[in-house]
Amino acid sequence: MEGELVIGEVLKPQGIRGELKVKPFTDTAEDMAAYKRVFMDGTEYRVLRARVGDGCVYLSLRGVPDRNAAELLRGKKLTVPRDDAPALEEGTYYIADLLGSEIFTENGQRLGVLTDIRQAATDIYTLDTGKGEILFPAVKGLVLSVDAVQKRITVYEKRYKEVAVLE
Image (cartoon, rainbow, N blue to C red):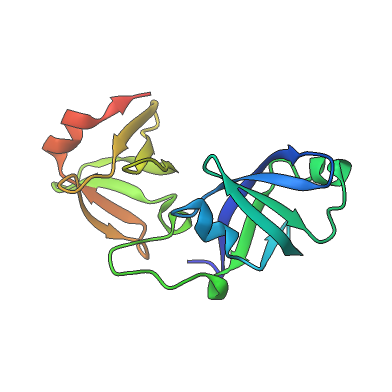
């Protein structure tokens, strides 16, 4: 697990005063709004203001004075040092730590690699099988174990086959 966490992605400028509309990769948008500093491409930005709306976070950052400056940040990932992130409860993980994990059935059959997690009422995992993508919810009874260090997730095969959807 690396020393920094990706906590969001700049979607677009918002307004003319340099505010950024950010898609949060945290459990809630409010979690992301609590950070006092963020990094993009290794450059530190101090958070001047943060507000939440429609599942997104709107950030005003020192050094981003207007829409033109904000436009240059479109598509950039926001990171924070892992030390700045809150400690996790047992059985919870940072998305960044799970991405790239190999997914196996309880019988050891490799299903593919976890490439995306969409946040909803229940997280939706995107699995790259090499032949296409499969989506499935990360619900209790389906995900049997998670080893974020070894990048290995084990799922219950019967339940997986019942809920998996070919993208």
